[in-house]
Image (cartoon, rainbow, N blue to C red; front, top):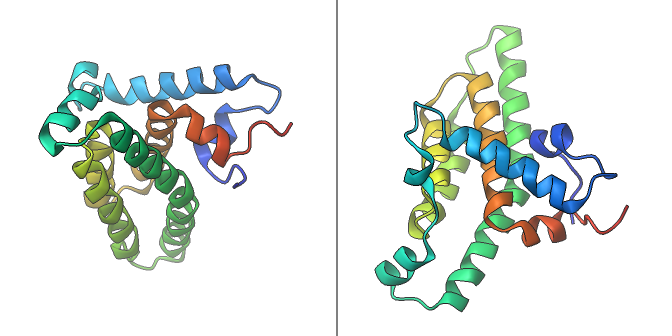
Amino acid sequence: MISFANNFSKKFFNRKDSFELYVQKAQKKCREFKNNVEHGSEEDFEYSIELTKSELGLDDELIDSLLEDYVTQILLTLPEFYKILDSLRKSCKKGDEPDMQPLRDLAHKNLGVARNLRIKDAQKILATIMISNNLEKIAVYLEYLEACAISLKPSVAYKIYNLDKK
């Protein structure tokens, strides 16, 4: 279990809210990303277990397990993303040239899993994080990453964030 170290969860979840409301807020944030003109349309990013099954030759149960592992990995990695982002912001404030490589490496690591599982929204989000030098844009994309991961497998977020404990 982890605490809400992530911007999306801090901004959009109040422990007094129901889990369903939390998921609705995550889905809304994810739709915001998907409907952004820069990215295409929401249909371009819909996850298709059937496509993944046919392309990878895996059954529903295995894909479901892999998706749970992916969402777990994303949610557990987000604090590391934010730690790196904070360090980059501090470098910029000092007037130093920020070393973007650790952030890019972490995004690249997660991008491989997203590509393997055909998770199109995560592919676009992580690819953007990898190439962007705009720290504020990266922060927004990290919120999108979290929201879309929660939307993909809400039950995983429920377990990871220990939402049954009020």
